[in-house]
Image (cartoon, rainbow, N blue to C red; front, side):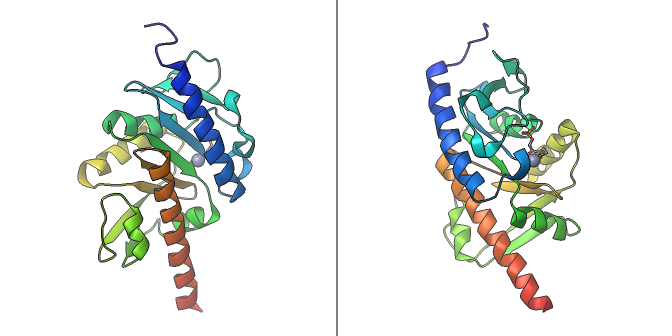
Length: 212
Ligand SMILES: CSCCC(=O)C(=O)COP(=O)(O)O
Ligand SMILES: [Zn+2]
């Protein structure tokens, strides 16, 4: 296999899509201080992902690189996102997943802190639950898991994998850190990300009202 074993034309298309969407998410204040990372499936062995440490509000084509599903850089000397394994584990496990988005908005991070003890955020009865693929009614509930934060990505990826054995998920929180959300393509992943953000905001506001 040579270094360019993926479709470079497709890579440019996906990089353009990532750049436009990430700039928009960044303008909402969801990617502070170079945080957050973003990827798209390129094919059944590769993903396009953001280079580690780049300012996500000023992303350009040089800030997107290719990795294989072991997280190994392909055709680049740059370091891929420190959290690459959390992306590639989803692409490897679910062939239908085409996009993984990770952000650090204040609502996501505060919710992760408040609900770390419970281990999940319970979301029930909201019309916006229908934003998640497969849901057709508000008369349902989901528990969004909150994992302990760690710099040990293989350990965290194994914990996520174990939960995916038991539960169908479109996203999870990491305590004191942020949100991972995914979907079949950018539009669906973004819809899920925005739904989580909105629902966490509602839960946090309700909590304030109940404790006032
Ligand atoms: C200063 S942000 C700390 C790392 C992080 O949580 C993140 O999302 C960005 O890491 P990356 O290596 O993808 O830039
Ligand atoms: Zn992060």
